[in-house]
Amino acid sequence: MTGRQHTRSTFPPHTSRRARAVRRALGVLVACASLTVGCGALPGTDGASGDDPITVMTWAPQDTNATNKPGMPAFAAAYARYINAHGGLAGGRKLKVITCNEKNDSITAAKCARQAVKANAVAVLGSYSQYSDSFFPPLEGAGIPYIGGYGITNSEFTSPLSYPVNGGQAVLLAGLGKELAANCGSVALVRPDNVAGDALPELLNSGLTAGKHAPTVDVLAEDDATEYSQQSEDALRAVATSGAGKDDQGCVVPALGDATSTFMDSFRRDREDYPAVRTATVLGSVDQTVIDASGGASGPYEGAYITGWYPAANDDRWDNMKKVISEQAFSDNRIDPADAGVQTTYIAYTVFKRVVESLAGGEVSADTVRHALDDGMEVGTGGLTPTLRWRFQDRLASVGFPRLTNADVTVQVVTKGRLVSGRKGFIDVTKTLEEAKLS
Image (cartoon, rainbow, N blue to C red; front, side):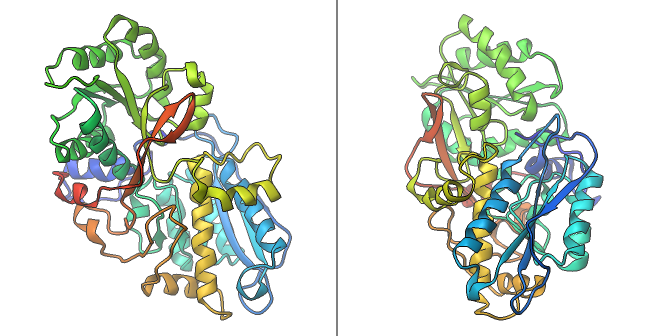
């Protein structure tokens, strides 16, 4: 789960407050915690040519009081074992994965990046960190590409060395708006009362407007409160009494990052006094682990719409990822195939494998990997994403996301306590974001 971003601003001084807020929406649902770094590596020898192992790094926060993604480095290590057990990468090269505990800390994030530089890593893959201002400078100085970040910072969609595999929070909110326009009466958004939160109504409304739906009711809340009874009642009252002209139930959308679970505690108590409503949110505020912890099928998320970047975990397209887990990490309870972090790491490594194969036995280095991606290489992921291709000025550059190449979202529904597919296929929100009033 993610919470508020704490990185320093990367926007030019002439950018409007609303435009800055939209950019920051990519990181509105992130969290921060403590210091210290712990790095480990699979056995092997550094090197980028000949028969030496190909070295990469994956980092994510672990053992903190806030956001934890231990499944990402754990899966990366399992993937390396799987690849090496099956003959290595193209030409029989061994894959060496270095992992780093980013600890949700800016200093530690920079240490992880410097560790990647020192180890001559050819790429950082499938990683999670909100501290892009800390980790990108060392990577950019060494020319190391960042492939498949979690999509929680502005820099992941602007840096020329970033190759995102999903569309971050912007596409999730736009896609959620499109889905709710067809399935909800009135919609109330409960969001942080801060600059980053200012962007959320615009992003959600971009999808609602595309579906010819009235704008959301905007309910402001402190994102670090200990209870949300007032906001819960305000949202319930708004969707129960606003004349939407539809027979559908109203929908309440909490988007408070780490505080979403606290809001839902209040909401669970208060909703009994109001007509039935549905809930909806995005991955990053809620994932399968949160649903499990809140009671599963008997919890407050049952029936909720949740937009994600990828197909539901029970989709056949994840079979190869599950094969990696079953062969190399069957008993590792850190790795949940339903975790969007694990899924992002798998897709990042899939992209990297395709890149190495495209080099046809030639040198594998940070430069050759980056050049292959920059030269228009198209990468398929077995239907888990659209075909990926990175251009510095892509279609969404005009709204501040020049590296956003995947604007597809999926809709999932919590059914019997599990996230399952809510509609067939992907929703492409590229046009929705292009036409939105985001500045």
